[in-house]
Image (cartoon, rainbow, N blue to C red; front, side):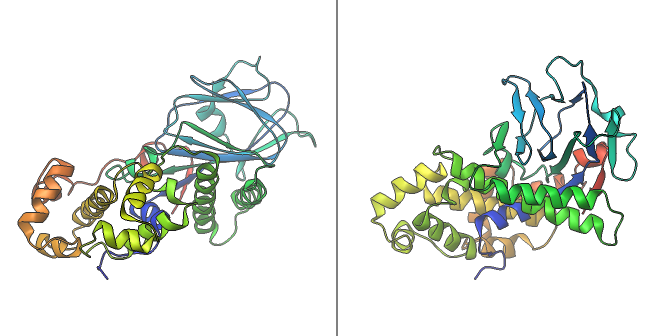
Length: 325
């Protein structure tokens, strides 16, 4: 097994993204209200613990969210959360900055008020496209969806943690938000039949087995015959099914994944270039460098030198929320 080998495509990809969870104060509101949110890479995720509200995403029809519904926004443009469609939006940043004890209230306290929890997850820009390129701008999971009840419970737990100043709170918030993200990805994969990268294989046993094998040993000299046998399919059937569900041919996917691992290892200075070549399945440093340049556009040495300065993150640039993790 390679020193860069793992077991699960979803866990591997999310781990490689170095997620930084930014948990906002919960919102409790009643009456006519509307908040406008600025763009925020890379993912916003949230749901309704209680009540209803409108989600108005630029370029999309307004969506009425019900109690227990959850949503995910991929690299969202500006959007509005509102109690009514007639309300004039106010900038969310100024309103949420007034939060106390983990929540902000709009209007008088009421048993009928809305209770909304929203988190934001920012990724390492070098590999963020591994996930953000696969996501539509808006994913809604209704509480009536097969995944909906579990997601509603996670949102309820996350909202509770935000409102309680308990030991280990930021750690719990971080893990809950990432669990919520994984379940949203599962729900999204189940909702659509279009190619969605590694998401497209989540519900496919044969293709999923091949993906897990690739991820577990990226240094192995994989060929189409071996992967087809793991999937219990003929080579032609496997190649077609893999491309349909994942979006690229199997061996091209392997190259892309190897280079994603290589970018991360180079950025963190984990291995020498010769060690990294062996860890990603190349017989020589020159063969690895040629593949790296083809995919990334620069040599491994050039890339490592370019990334020695840490990238600015959206989470660090927006101190409005509390970073958990």
